[in-house]
Structures are given as structure tokens and as C-alpha cells.
Length: 238
Ligand SMILES: C[S@@+](CC[C@H](N)C(=O)[O-])C[C@H]1O[C@@H](n2cnc3c(N)ncnc32)[C@H](O)[C@@H]1O
Image (cartoon, rainbow, N blue to C red; front, side, top):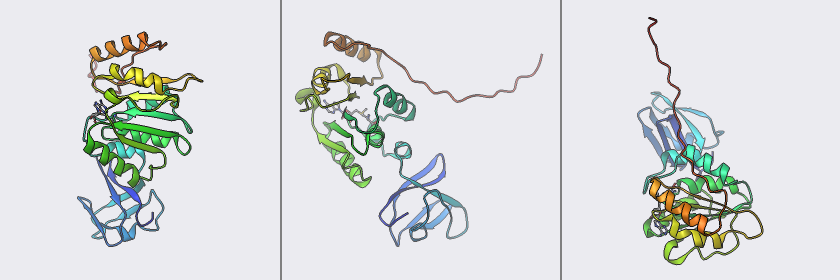
């Protein structure tokens, strides 16, 4: 852990906080007070006892998975089950070029960036100016600026401004069907491209699927990704 690092202070799965490690600063929570200076030089994963000996925390890397759990919500966000499922189906891996819109709170963007780094690139577009600005600041803070280009842009009106470069396109928009033609233009023509549109309503899915079909996409499939905790129940024998 070094001065200036973005790190996660982990107490329990429900109690995780992002910090910028700064000499002279103190982190306080219900488990006690922790001096940043005592974190510097430790290995990530270390357990730290509180200054007042009330409890302990772990200092962890600021991974995209932890970031998704703590990111300040400016919008609805993608969570880990959808993130993993979509990343696999879009065949994201190091070196891939990805286009995304809207950036929203940047939850999925962080995972995309980590998956395609160090040689891939994510172009992410957001038409809400403040959200675009905050996401851009977070990419810089998290040392992802080399992998992510974030732009303030209305992709429905203006398209992506990219042609024949993307291996994959991800849409999380209210009217994704209006962005499909621009997405098609952005996809590489020399290989099989993949597109995922993420929508909460079946009417949005239907319209997008129709447009994908009209514009010549094949293998159009719809999934709902549900995660269920395993439940153990005690049942009295008859
Ligand atoms: C649900 S959020 C995306 C959340 C994101 N996937 C995440 O994981 O944090 C949808 C975003 O799309 C943006 N948006 C809506 N229409 C847009 C457009 N025409 N061009 C660019 N962004 C747009 C909204 O401002 C909003 O921030």
C-alpha cells in the first residue's frame, strides 16, 4: 500500500469504503479509528487493528468488483451477475475494443476496462454532462485513463463517431433500438462483432430485437440473469 493509492477498507461484506491513502488522515467507522500512515507499506490483504483497539479492518485493492459494491449511484447500475454474464457473452478479454453507452455510474465500465487492459480500449459515452464528468474523474483516479476514453455525447442524435473499430458494443439506454445502426457502423467488419443491449422492460427488448434483425444481425438471443441464495430450511418430519 502506497501513499496516494485508491484502496478499499473492508470490515464486512456490507461495510466497505473506498479511500485515497493519505499520510496524516484517519479512517473512522464503527470498528474504530485507523491511521492511513499505518497502512502505508503493508501488503494488500493485511489486517489492521484499530488505533483504539476496538476492532479491525482489511485493506484491499480497489478492484472493479468491490467498486461496483461501493460506487456512488448516479443511476441504476449493473451488478456482478450481469457484469460477469455479459462480459463472457461479449467475449471480452485483453486487447479488445469496446463501445459502451450510457456510462451512467461507470459500474460496468470499470469491469470492462479491467478485462480488456492493458492493450484494449473502452470508448464510453454519456449524454448527462455531470455524470460524464464524474465518471471521467473516477477513471483517472483509478488509473484507468489509458484504457478508457469517456465522452459527453448523445449517441442517439450523434452516433458514436467511430467506424469499423469495435469488437463489442454494450447499450444500456432507454431507447437502445435508436443506437443499433450507429453500433453496427462502429463494429469491425473483418471479424464477428457482438452487441448486448441491457433493458429492464420486455417492450424495449422486442423493439431492439426487431431492429437488430432488420439491420442484419444474427443469433439474436434474450437472457434474464437471476441469482438466488441457496436456502436451507428445517422441516419437521410427519
Ligand atoms: C442505467 S444508466 C447506465 C448504467 C451503467 N451501465 C452502469 O453500470 O453504471 C443509463 C445511462 O444512459 C444515459 N443516456 C440515456 N440516453 C442517452 C443518450 N442518448 N446518449 C448517451 N447517454 C444516454 C443516461 O443519462 C444514463 O446515465
